[in-house]
Image (cartoon, rainbow, N blue to C red; front, side, top):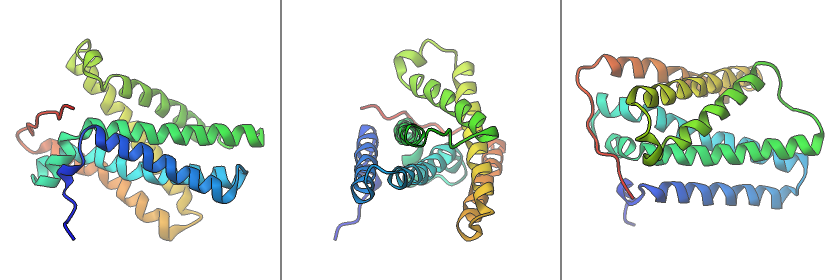
Length: 206
């Protein structure tokens, strides 16, 4: 069997494959459990779990290329925009699942700090998605664009961290490692930022 090479999956193929695969997974879960509270909860959990590895790749793409230049880290950095769009689509599915659950249960199912963070993260997600397209990006200063995306990713980092730490109280074996992986993202980025020089990779165009 021929090995699957990363360069076979790039640009919009990443977005399309993610969108179709996750949508299919959600439909299978709903088919198996019906349009019930259990079925919708499973789709929410599935989209949340799929979004995390996308977030990790998106967060560490430039840092990994700077610290450990390789074909894989080059691929991550070159396709960062499309990984971000794939992440946005998965989170859109996640939001649709929560909306369906609220309609079914007539309860918010989320409150306090988690609710506030969710609203902020979704606001940043919309802004980051819109400004990922060149026509809009050109109208922004590099400082504004960079600040928007850096702050948005920082909010998502904190959201995942506090979510996994909270879940670790229920299942330490699964969620503690996820919390540690999330916590490690920030020091890795800080270490990469102190390394002289900047990675120069042309953005992949469709």
